[in-house]
Image 1 (cartoon, protein in one colour):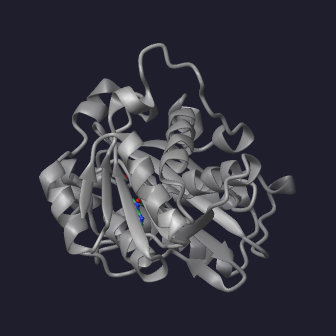
Image 2 (cartoon, rainbow, N blue to C red; image 1 turned 180 degrees about the vertical axis):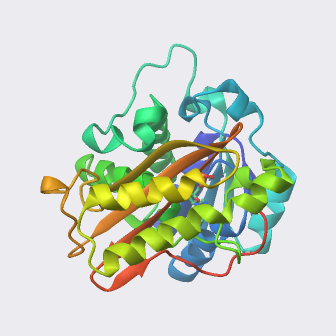
Length: 301
Ligand code: AMP
């Protein structure tokens, strides 16, 4: 496994495999790797000849210095996890490669980035879209893997890939959860014991809301109110948003009347336990609630 710091070197690595007609799978990450990230790596390993992982704690997608500074970071452990999964290249992103001084060329996806996480975190998706674009140019993957835990991000990346004519297939993977339902996140380790014990209630509330929709509730307002009342009982958590939207457009359903056909309904939330921000979502389609449960390992990173 190669561990490279410069994107120019990673581009040379990629070019060699492209010339040999070998397929490249790519998993971009912020680091703090856990089973959620590794599930993407494993899928890439199954489907591609070579697998590249980037680890780059991109400051431009953080809104607070505190969140950035307290983000878990153990590069040696991350590199070891990649080695154990048979990754071929780890690119350790450098600020001077991606956002040198006087950087001005941002990539924006407009409507899809406005609501949900975009509303409370101005500039977040601009940072994500810009670095994903840069990484796609460097790695030139055939397939790139993203988790549905970040449903809005996955949608936005798909959109930018299509509209900016990248020749890369975006593969979306289910959310990996702890056995108690909490979606794995690098931030989970920052929860206190009490917060960690309370956190599975988020997923429970989402599943109950999903069941409500599956059993025929069509009012977005009623589902939202149900969720708000369930979440009001979760000790110590402050709500950033709860939304019940079209999973296809991330917009409201006409007349707020839910429709589970096609991509169906997205029920999404973001909450904050003191400084720790957690997001989660489920999708409800005609076939039922897909809360993307798989058995992940306990803990976050
Ligand atoms: P991050 O390092 O948080 O930017 O995540 C890198 C990739 O891993 C993104 O595509 C995330 O959606 C994905 N990811 C993070 N947590 C999970 C999880 N619990 N299950 C599945 N994918 C995840």
